Amino acid sequence: MKANTDLISASCVMDLPRHCVAFAQFAPQGFALVEGESCVVLCVNSAFSRLLQKPVEELVGKRFEELFADNHSCAHAFDRVHSTGKPERHVEVKGSEAHPIYWSCTLWPVGSKEHVDYVMLEITLVDEHPQKALEMSEALLMGSVRQHLLVEESAALNERLRLEIGERKRTEKALLESQSQLRDFSAKLESEVIERTAKLNETSSQLEAFVFMVAHDLRAPLRAMQGFSTLLIEDAGVALSDSTKDYAKRIVKAAQFMDDLLCDLLAFSRISQQQIELFPVSLEEVVQGVISQLQKTLGETKAQITLPKQWPFVLGYKPILRQVLFNLLSNALKFSAPDRPPRLVIRTEEQAGFMRVWVEDNGIGIPAEYQTEIFHPFTRLNGVQYEGTGIGLSIVKKGVERMGGSVGVESTPGKGSQFWFELRKPLSP
Amino acid sequence: MNRDGTILLADDSEDDILLTRIAFEKAGIKNSLQEVHNGEEAIAYLKGEAPYNDRARFPLPILLLMDLKMPRKDGCEVLTWLRAQKGLRRLPVIILSASMRVEDVTRAFDSGANSFLLKPSSLSELVAAIEALGNWMKFNHFPSLTDDA
Image 1: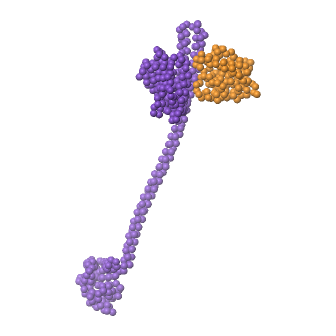
Image 2: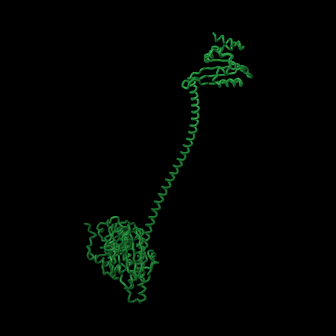
Image 3: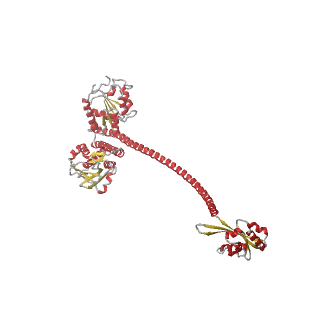
């Protein structure tokens, strides 16, 4: 009961109410009462003495800062509590880092609000577990705060996602609409192309039919004109005067020319429009065929033809190639010079991927300025001496072009012309 | 059948028929010539329908010389009809046309034509063609059109 006596004695000294001292006497925490102005320790309880490991006599009567010589923060806290009248609590760490000891130190004023007479000090040795719990609770708090933040953030992100998904859905819908529009457009375009192609084919075949009808129907009255004017000359020949006979002859000739014109027009129209397929064609076969077709004219004109020793194959369409060579050879015979018999040369020349076929003559030739023009329809350079429709070379040009080739001419007026056309070589002859 | 029998000309052009008649005359072919001016008339003549029901006046021909392009029924339609007839289907038919179209030649032969001659534009060529026809007739054996044995 020594401690008890100490406290009682102290309380007596300090004139404190007796029960005030008594309530702290056996408290498990250490209590100390310090006088405000002088900082002198007025009394301590036994827990205080035990915690500081010093007998009560050594503590009472000492100045507060002497109790915690090594701890200035406690002394500063005392000054603050004394001057402000506000309580403070501190946790101090002592001992080694591996085994920390936590001191909890609470100071609060005793007295009136205006004047702090005493400062009460309570110290507790805090186990490390509560500290850890504190840390954990702090961490939990921090965690919950962080969680809260995260929840808020995720809510914001969700909102943004929702907006973005909405946006995306709208974009997708717009895209689908555009795609279906595009499909509609392309379907419409396709059907328009089909429709127009059909129309074009129809127009084309209508045109061909029209040209055929024109040629066919125009030729019928021509046959009559020609036939009956011929009969007129034959049957009434004796009764007709020379000039009347000449008129009738002119009717026959004009009808014949018109018939040639219609035939050439028909051929030109057909060559432009007919469906063709290209095959390897023997040039020799075609040329020989044309020569036998022209045999009569060749004999009449005393013409000579030099043919190549080696005959190539060309990629072409036989009926058109025959027409092309027929027109070139009959032109070469027709436009011969009056003073010499025609000398014709057919030769071939291999080019890169192409075969060039030359048809050369020693005829009247073509002035340079007309060498392009002669391939246009109805171009006639020699109206009076040489009859012709002016379509023959147009047929040649169109025909060669239809077979994927080209034509040209080199010529010296008065000496002769060298016509050529180029056709692709077949891959394997 | 007698090769001196009647030849039937079917053509919508009176001029061409007249020129053909003249060409026959100039070629010295004596066969009698009858004429019709469209496909329907040709069928009526061959069937012996009015106004061609008098076979003494309009005898069954030994040869039909026919244009392709005719009103009512064209040459190919007449040929298609003809080739489906009992006996009559053997009648030799020569197409005499101004058409140079490959398609027309093909169509004519597919319909049962025996020959296809291009109408020449000059009288002399027409006479030459008819002379050739006369030579062919001298050597041709004409079938019976009535006996369907």
